[in-house]
Length: 258
Image (tube, rainbow, N blue to C red; front, side, top):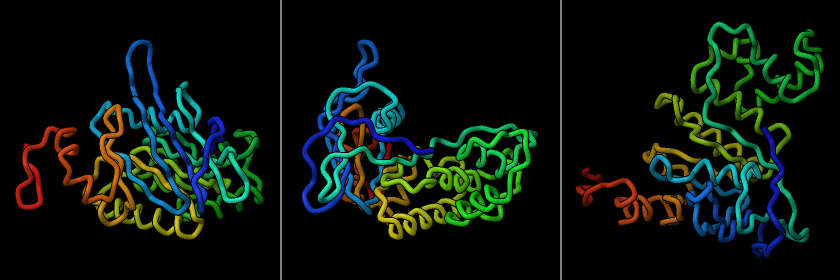
């Protein structure tokens, strides 16, 4: 799924394209969901968003996607072009599908990227296009499988392939490792690394799997209504702010105690 960013124009980042979020706030009636959020996301950078449940991670994604009201500024700039609206690929948390539904990956994908009627056979040209999209994420073998019969890792590949068609400038993934086994987690993260290097994408993803962050994330943002800490994985995961956000005790030989 792709979305244009609906942010207001603002100052850019010198020397490289980037998404700039300045003093973003989100309120739901009288409840402040996000307060004074500011950060940059540069091309080719992979940034992890972490925080306890209810910290506002999904609300931040929805703000960037233009799906909910906010105050502040969200802008995107590339060298020599000025403020623009980037194309954003979005992978939501794994949706649930009826395992008995006869809908194939081809049917689901074709309906999402084209106006072709779902009750008609998919033409060869569209089938080839879907096949090429799945091949981009090493998921070509999934083309004719039932969407409800996919494993967590297989479904993430299909959703990722959809988010990359057409190729976006920014890729946002909401808990992509949820429901994926350990082997699948590393395969998916390696795939994301390959995609961002090949296409120079900015990738922002949320996760509760902190073990993968030192290997894959360039930076980590700790969110709890406000942006509590931002920096390299080790810097954030070993910080007092991290321990406070997750109600952890003092560090003990590289780990934490509750």
